[in-house]
Amino acid sequence: MLSDLKNEENFRPDRFETIIKRPYEDLKLRYDILETNYRVWHKCLEDHRHETPLLQLFSNRQVMILIILLTDSKRHETNKHEFLKKLSQDRFDHLTDQEEMKLTIHYLTHYLRSLRLHGCNLKEDRIQQLFETHKIDPKSDVNDSLKKLCQFLNEIFNDGHALLKQTHGARENLQYLVCPEKRESTIKSSPFSHELDIETVCILINIYQHRLPSNFQILWCSTATEDDIHLFFSRIRTFRHLIFVVLEIDVMHHRLREILLNEQDALTRYEKLHACVYYFSRELTCRKGLRPFIIPPKYTNPHSSQTIYNNFFQHNGWTSPHTDVICGAAGIGKFLLLYRDIA
Amino acid sequence: MWLSAEEATVLDNALITMEHLYRSGIVHMHFRHLMNEQSYMEIGYSISKLQSFERQISDSEELPDQRREDTERIPFTLTMSDIDDHKRQLTFCNVDLNENMLYKKILLQEQLKLLRLVSNIYLLSSKLEMAGHPKYQLKDEQFLLFDRNGRWSSPKELR
Image 1 (cartoon, rainbow over the protein chains, first blue to last red):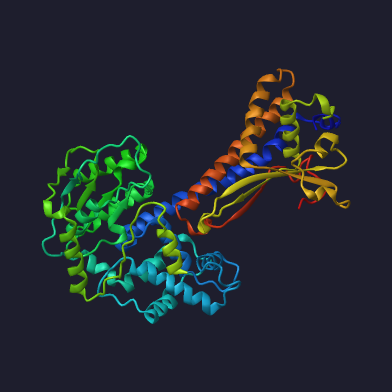
Image 2 (image 1 turned 120 degrees about the vertical axis):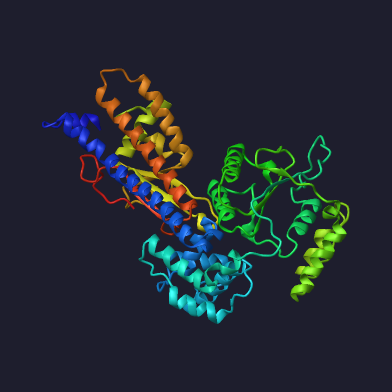
């Protein structure tokens, strides 16, 4: 390549450099555009979350999926179409418009129900009607998409009043460190040992006496990203009357744990009131602003916790799901039994 | 560049790959996180049959396209780990080239810069995808590494 270049009569070193550098310059432009878009996306999310508190209840990925679902797509080869096909487990080779609409409403309802806000009408026809009102044009930019999504959420949930009003007896502005009993350390830890053991579940049920927690009230630290942690703490500051729980701190990556502890520190110094937070950890010690939570013995009693759980279902008039417990030694055939029953 | 097959070493191989990338390299990026699949990037280039020599024909990388008589070019693909290997080899080559091969050094350094920029673009696009930007999901991107109007671009269209 160099030889046939040098054989040219009009070889000029500066032109050589220009030709070589051209792909680099083009790609550099692309990179700068990407960086700008990244910053714009984060800024838009922050601004809209500040304006519409309901948007804070969904993680970044959930917001993205909501936007995709809410986008009005007439053509069939869009992202939404591919996404819905994959979710419906490829039962259809080709989704008709009507099937696509049905699946869209179905998945939208799933996300809206996950917020567990009482007193909101989440019937299918209402959602469909609101979809028609607030659907997003595929050509709109992220700012417009987020605006439409916020309007949609506000209209369904009446601006989130149910979450922002005070409930009786709720404690505010406190952070507790819950230390479940230390397990005896085994030489090889069992692969089935879980952070969510019976003791933690019992304590959780007792803490949430009057309502079961929603997805956004719990931070699962083993799978949280940095954005998730910051989002969780912004929820704590916005929804002062709810209770929040941080689980699985002990299995976090150390870099994320540092971010979590910094956020906890910032929360301690926050001047306004914030919600009550419970941190479940066997390894953390009490730091500034973190009170030790004295666990009353009845909190760890599985039987009384189950009573509370059943009462909760009865009180709300729901039928509790039928559960069968299957337990036995390894190799006895539990999985086979399940497989036969389901199939 | 003309090398006999037996004496081609790993380092010379890097220089040959560098030349092919300059002539016909294309970067393909596929983002699949929305479908819960892995996102990945690869670089493809092709060699025209007239220039290829015996060793490459028996190479295990070749694709069945080569068998057809009407195509003149043999396509090759570098996966993400191949790209990292190539960058490492170029860095070693940089030390070995002596000072009076100035233009070769320039070519090598420019390619290293370019490949690093391509990696950065891939990382940033991945970050955008994971942060949930709705316009950066399920994308297939293509970037040309060769200069279309330049001296060394291939005359035929690459498909």
